[in-house]
Each structure stands twice: as C-alpha cells, then as structure tokens.
Image (cartoon, rainbow, N blue to C red; front, side):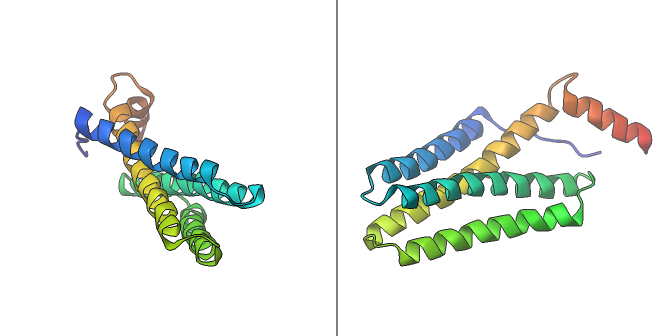
Length: 147
C-alpha cells in the first residue's frame, strides 16, 4: 500500500498562486491586446484546452501509477491533446504579428499556467485522499477488498 504525503500549506498556496498569476496574466494580456476578437478567442480557447488537457494527463498518469485502470485510448488522447495545444500555441505565436516580447509573455504565462494546474490537481488529489471517510478512502477500501 502506498503512503500519500500531504502537501504543505506553502506548496498548496504557491501552486494556486502560480496558477492564478499565469492565467490572469495571460488573460490580462489578451484583454489589452490590439488583436481581432477572433484571435483573442483562439488564444483563450487554447488556454482552456491546455489547462484541461494538462489536468487530464496528470490524472491519467497518477491513476496508472496507483494501479487504477486507464484505457490506452484515453491515455493517448491526453498526450495528443497536450501536444496539440502546445503545437497550436507555437504556430499561433510564430505567425502572430506581435512583438517578440509579447510572444514570450504569452508563451511563458501559458506554460506557467499548465505547470501550476498540474500541481494544483496533484494537491487536490493528495488532500482528498487524506480525508477520513472521503470518496477516495472508500474507493481505496473497495480496491483493497477486491485484491
């Protein structure tokens, strides 16, 4: 049986802070950008898609490491989604008529958001498994009874 160490309050706070800083900076940049609305929508959709695909991939990797079944198809789709969103952002920024500093700003705030959302999801899961009588504990009990 694996022992899950609870994350410290400092790590949880730093993770949420990084996520908020990255996402808000990205969105603030979009709000103040002098680009057409459809281009802003493209980058906004990439942010949402990127956050979702990073969380899905992290959850799938963690599920597999804990012996929870994840289909190969879903696992592959998670990897494909993350690679696709990174590729689409790269192509979009490469072809954008933005200053190099603006392109770097969007890329770095996007990557910060992806990294932070993985840490936040990990913290949420670690804190959830430590809850007495919680959903994760009952799922663990069911799995250990099946073994």
